[in-house]
Length: 230
Image (cartoon, rainbow, N blue to C red):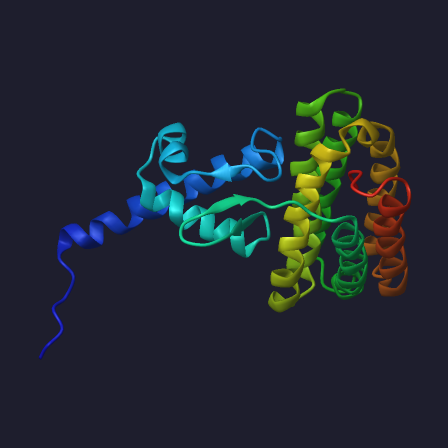
């Protein structure tokens, strides 16, 4: 029996569905990261759909995506809740990032283009400007910029598999920022200094320097208060 081609209306709905799912994902993710949806909170599809302004289907897609990133856990039939993390899991998260991202930095040192390094400099400058601000919103802005900084390095490491492995770990540590909000501000300046050292290593094309600096960067965050921003 021949397979019928999708109708024009069905094809036209796909981009809109994708946009709704993306909107739901960003809205729910942001609420998890800023603590509006705390660890252990149940995620009711209908309630989330009303808050975000979409139907339940995009919310369901968003929850599946957040589950794959480690921010949401599924238990039983359609039961989702914000995932909590043990101290052992937090420690493992730092150690895995130190391992993967130091290797990524070494690879990126010989692959980053001048324009990419300029992009890292702009992000570093923006983070330095944010450090002067105090409060949750400033810390969240720093976090987004920091996320972009590390993503540039991962993208230029030339390994999609490694990027896929590290991305969920980055999401987990964004959530931890809420738990350790009281210790974050004092460590932002150190983080900015590490970023500048990484940029210097990239400009020199020195893989060993970049690898060592990234490892120091990651482990420093772990040692000064597990969950502090880096």
